Amino acid sequence: MGGVALITALALSWVHGGQAQATPDTAVGPMVSKAIPFDSIGAVVSRRSWSPIVALAFHFSVGSTDDPPGLEGRARVAAEGAALSLMALLDGPSVEVHVGRRETVFTVRALPDEWERALDLSFSALASAPTVEVLRQALAEHLERVAFEDGAPLSEFNDNLDRLLAGGDVPGARPIDGTLESVVSLDAAAIVVQARFTGGQLAIVGPIEPLEVATILGNPVVVPGGRVIRLDASEAALATSAAPIDETLPWSAEAREVVVAGVINSWTAAAYPAPRGIPRTQLEFVAHILEEQLDPYPPADGVFGIEAEVRDLAAGPVLVVIGTFRPDVGGGWEDRFADRVDELIAGAPPSPFFESFLKRFRAHTLLAEPAPEDEARRLVSEFGLGRVPRDLAAEISLLEPSAVTATIRRLGPPRMLRFGPPQGG
Image (cartoon, rainbow, N blue to C red; front, side):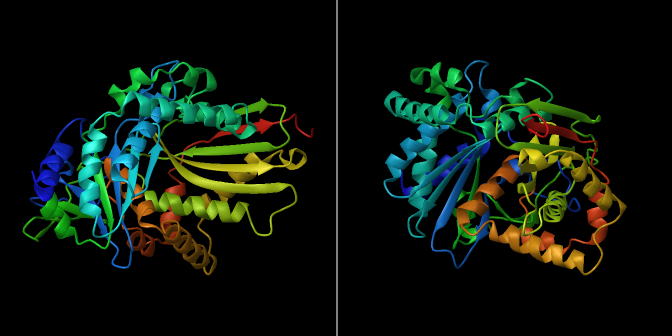
């Protein structure tokens, strides 16, 4: 079977096979007649005419929450083994793998005149299990990393934060990479079946026309923003859920936890639950404003850094603010985080401060994806989780002060964590 024909056959199996397709959880734009459903899309395609490479990203709805109790880290080793096999087969293009709680994403870089071959080989390699020898290599390398990080203060803080956000010792709170004890218990031969990846989603970013990809795959493709390109070059909308936006929060009651540990720094986190249907770009903009307000330059004495980000839990998105401090100045920061949120609830920053925040958010967000593989990884994750892949530049251009206020008023009560030595010690 020739190259294009083989890719087409594999793509049909890819789109319709294996795992159940994600169901969109966000209504974006009006429903239109003859809209194209998610499970008919061959790929998300973002054209970058200036890019010297093509990035291919493959998304699978499997992650660390699928690890059996006591065998945490198995999903990571399975993915690392598949990546090693894929790299050996491609013999040139680089491969990266990301393992989350509910997803695994492989990213491949290829030259523009070799991307079809890379796609063909990637489909084949990911659908085939690595050898036991390759998985033993992946397991040995992963065990070395886990042993090196075992007992590290930052890892302990993150483990405590994960448990707080998930609501206890549940699958969604167990370490993605596993523990030293669990990884030592893994058997490479038993991981072979799990290291076969089929039925995923695909994103392609580079100097490639969407219609070209649709023709090769034999399926319509979608571009960032939700516009679908059919095989006959006509356009359609991506069918999204017509259900009302889900306003359910991941949790509804405030919680505070203090973990005393024999470490030299102090960490404080405040996590605010958001409705599942909240516009993602608006929530990320709120996180950006909070981070800039809480972490000015130059930093305050004893403040090593404050970051704000949006995380995805199984129950919905969460805005998380994390600060690292010298112990003698680390007290009370959870209340300062809350005060900043209350200020934004009262109203968005006035002009010209709002315009300044927006310009820096635009620059920060777009510069965060300088390489095509970064954009491909985001697009395929959004699509794999049932969301319309975003056109970030277009969405940022529509942000207004009222959106900031409306977004932050939809946040729920925080869960807060302080981790470090006794206060003042």
